Structures are given as structure tokens and as C-alpha cells.
Image: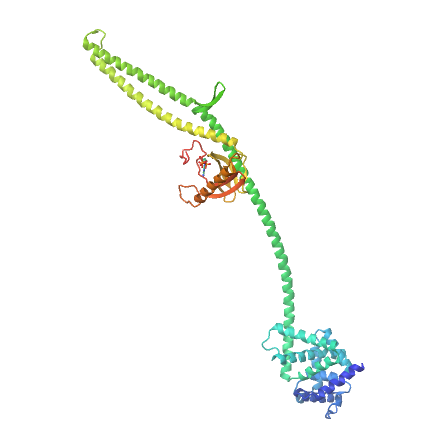
Length: 500
Ligand SMILES: Nc1ncnc2c1ncn2[C@@H]1O[C@H](COP(=O)(O)OP(=O)(O)OP(=O)(O)O)[C@@H](O)[C@H]1O
């Protein structure tokens, strides 16, 4: 306590000795406050009058008093009460209260707590003014944020007063004394302060709203992210389901096609012919046996040929009879010339019709031969398909669903396939290297295939199949993916195949 009162005296001395313009005002105000304490309107004694009962309180109020005290002399007390009422609603700040409380305790124990609270704006203002002076005019040209920061700084300055003791208090008081400004400035600052408080309250409200909104948005975004993830998973599941359904369908269709192809082969074999096994001693060989339709056709042709020969023979005999009649050797049995001519005409016309019929049969036989050739190729295809290691509807490269065999080349098998990414039919050419080949031969084959691939992929022409892709299947097999040419699998398709 003694330390605190000493501090109060120091403050007073300091204020008394302060030579800046505000100190004269301060003295004036002190005088006025002294008058308030003792209603006798005698001029207040200079320095020592500050010492009595409530100098600190007076001093605190002095800061908040209007600068032109001469006009307020009459109602100074009323003004002070008003000030207290105005400032009381402010929310108490522990740091401020503590800082000022220490000071006031040292100056006057009788100062009430409410008055201590009243002093806070003064500290705020003095700090603000001090800071304002340091950087130019306080609120002018600075944003809300900086004002709020100013307030914070003021608070921290007050805290520093407590922390650093007497010297800090003096410094603070010094700054406050130098911060005594005119009425207008003070009123403006008050106004600004209340404005800022209002703004701070609004900002705090907005901030809490924003925080709440941000929490809501974060929750919403989390929920949306989860929903998105679920949707993606669902989408993925749906896609894999779709692919499964699609490949199942494709497989079912391919199986049906395979079955249909075999049934048709049987029917056509009966009509056009089949491969039979011939055994000659120990040697077993395959021979072609014509089908019923070709057999019938051949027998028709044979009978036509026989008929033709008969007619030809008859014509010859007619001509012979005619020549015999001219010799007179067999006059009674000989036919009249007219009859011979008539018979010859009949033979000629029959021969012409037989020739026409024969030509028709021959054309039909050519057609049968063509069908027979296709049948033989289809039979070979089915046999190759049955013997292929890729005939079990594999999915290559996670993309190409192998279906039915289209054909077999020198070193390759070509499968019809469905591209599960591009959703289109393609032809997968599976190049198989002979396992018996030397490594050198294999490398040579691969080199040639890659060269072919590099040339082929650059070719774009309506009459050239496009080459889409190439990938390795295993050490001895790789695949090139080609544009699919339809019509190659349908054995009896009306459309001519470019491969036939
Ligand atoms: N793009 C395609 N679309 C439909 N079918 C095809 C396609 N490519 C090939 N084929 C079928 O595969 C069969 C064999 O193919 P290709 O003629 O290319 O083999 P190759 O050239 O003899 O083989 P290799 O290159 O191994 O010597 C053809 O006869 C044809 O039926």
C-alpha cells in the first residue's frame, strides 16, 4: 500500500512537472475538480492540492472531461455523473480493472470500484491516442481490423502496467496526460469507440454465424463427400454389374451362335457333303463325300448326258437311213424324206432343251461347289475353335471379351471380341509363337510383327481394317486388336466377305 501511494505521488509530481500543453489543461482540470470536492470557488493550489483524498479519481475523470472546462465549470459534477452512467454498460475487462485498480489503490483507497471501471475508457483512449500519435491520426484511414487491434493493444498495454509495476504506471499516466485532447476529439473518439464496439459486436455476431455456417458447410461437405463416395462405389458396382450382364449376354449369344453353326453344318453337310475317313491299309486319310443335293444334281446331269447321247445316236441313225434310201438298198423299210426331216428336227429341239437344262444344272453345281468350299472352311473353323486355348470366353487385357473364332492364319487365331471400354466389336488376332522355335526365330517373328504393326497403325483407308491396339498375353503370345469386319463368320451370308 505504501508503495502504491508513493506511486500516486510520483504520478502527481510527474504530471505537475509535465511541460507539454496538456499539462496546463490538466492543472486547470485539477483546479476544477478541487472545486468540485470543496464547493468553495477558490482557485486550487498548484501541485500539493492534487495529493488529497481523490486526486487519482479526479485525474481519471480529467481525461474524460471536455477540454474547454471554463464553460463547464457550473455543471462539472453533473457531467461527471453522466460520464459514469454512459461508461458503466461496458463489459468489464479484468486486465484493465486490475491495472487501474492498482493505481487507484495507491492513490486513494476510497475510490469505488465503479469508478475504477470508469477509468478503463480513459486508458483505452489514452493508449489509442498515444498510438494514434505515433502513426498519425488514429481511426482515419485504417480498417476495422486495425481498430480492433488497437483495442487489443490497449488492453495488453494495461496488462503491462500491472506486470511492470510503478514505472509502467507512470509511463501509462504520462501517455494519458499527454492524451488529453479537445472536446471534439474526445467526443469523436467516444463516438468512434461506441461505433467500433457496435461494429465489433456485429462482427462477433457475424463471426459466430460464419463459424456456425462453416461448421454446417463442413458437415454438409462431409456428407456430400460421403454421398459422392457411396455414389462412386454404387456406380462402380453398377458398372461392373453392367459389364457382367453384358459379357454374360455376349457369351450367351456366342454360345447360341456356336450351337447354331454346328446345327447348320450338320444340315449343310447332308446337303453339300462331309469329310469321311478313308482307310487304305494302315494309312488313314480324309476324303470328301458329296451330300445329297450334289449327288442328285450329278445324277440329273448324268441322266441328261445319257438322254443327250441317245438323241445323238438316234439322229445318226436317221441320217444313215436317209443315205441308204438314196442307194435303193432298202426301199420298203426306208422312211419318207419328210419323216426323216421331221424326226431330225425333233431330235435337234430335244438336244437344245437338254443343253439348256444341263447348263442350268452346271450353274447349280458351281454354286454348290462354292457352298461346299464355305462349308469346308466353316467346318475347319469349328474344328480350330474346338482346339483353341482361347475358346472359353476369356477377357483379355481387362478389356476385350473374346467370343467366337473368326479364322485361323499361318501363325495366328483371330477371334471376334467385344471391347468393354469402347463398347464395340473388334477382331483380336492372337499371334502364337511356336514353343519349339528357337529364341532367334521368335525374336525375328516379333520384330516382323512389330514392324507390320507400326506400318499398319498409320494406315487409314475405308478398304483397310484399322489397327487399334497391341499387347502381350504371355511369353509366346501377343495380341493385335483390329477393326472387326462383319460377315466373315456367317457362312451363308448373302454379303460377300472380303476374306473369302
Ligand atoms: N479384322 C477382321 N475381322 C474379321 N475377321 C478377320 C479379321 N482379320 C482376320 N479375320 C479372319 O481371320 C482369318 C485369318 O486371318 P488372317 O487372314 O489375317 O490370317 P493370316 O494373315 O493368314 O495369319 P498370319 O498373319 O498369322 O499369317 C481370316 O481368314 C478371317 O476370316
